[in-house]
Amino acid sequence: QQQVKQSPQSLIVQKGGISIINCAYENTAFDYFPWYQQFPGKGPALLIAIRPDVSEKKEGRFTISFNKSAKQFSLHIMDSQPGDSATYFCAARLNSGYALNFGKGTSLLVTP
Amino acid sequence: GAVVSQHPSRVICKSGTSVKIECRSLDFQATTMFWYRQFPKQSLMLMATSNEGSKATYEQGVEKDKFLINHASLTLSTLTVTSAHPEDSSFYICSKDSNTEAFFGQGTRLTVV
Image 1: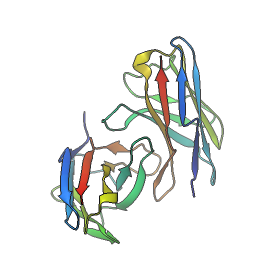
Image 2: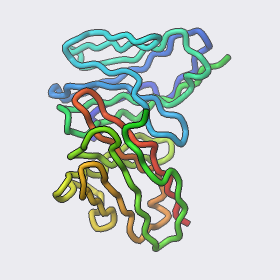
Image 3: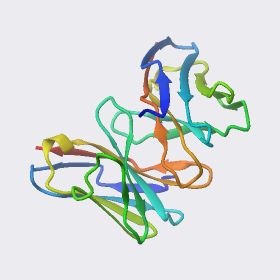
Image 4: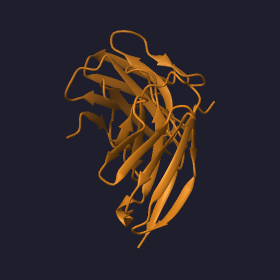
């Protein structure tokens, strides 16, 4: 059973635009919500992560918005660039020592 | 720099043979490591949790006799795909945790011909 639901499956954004990817979870015990970027043939790389005690976290062009009551979190990529074209995965887990539960992924294409 | 080193990055093997994939923790010791499998255009699915000095914990539907996991030291976990078949062709990725984040290896692309 998919514990983290991610949408959209694919996304096309023009250069300079904002890319928005959404995720929802069911387990209220989840304590850590990371976003990963993956290029073909490579392992996932951590972009940004948030814990449920904050509602927003920003690092450069990447922002996570977290809505604990709705059990949703989203990734915003500002000023999207062609180099951002990749697959993005949201994930969630319990405490350290537990495996990550991944969303199905979003294939992002940023057009020039 | 990389904190998890996974080798090989790519391997092609004949059907019926076995392949070993290594996952090393380069900075701190890891009593627990995770093995994921990713089919093309799909998400990462947890296969098993590797525990140093004890048996691995396998997810439902993952054959423990086919995917042998050994975690004999605090810095090394290995996954051996035994009697590989074409349907085992996939991208295998290991990871470990710190208190703040999960670190992933570079992944191993296994092709069984």
